[in-house]
Length: 161
Image (cartoon, rainbow, N blue to C red):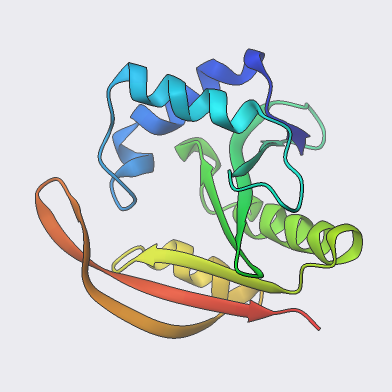
């Protein structure tokens, strides 16, 4: 994984505008809003930062950018997440990237509490979280809307000790 740079705009744009990627996450936003989100993620992250850290997930052998992962720390718990290009679904990249992110956060930042929010029905992402030890702690009905339909959020926690 590498820090997000200006050169990663095409990847970031594609991830946030590919229906298969965002269908169970969020609605697309206009280009100006997306560019603003991208610029915010370029700001170097530190433990007191209020913005998302964003790292590019790369294939080990080729270095090809295949997705993004990151976290945002709030009240001592880091919310983690990832987005992958559809061609790389089901190959373990989500699990591997989250495990690496958590390992780094624990060893170098002394962060031991993690959270992930998954839209109900996003079974693949829930399996990724469960595989690496996250536990479902709460369901929030009608938490947000995607495509005009209301969805329940599943809140997962992991306490790495």
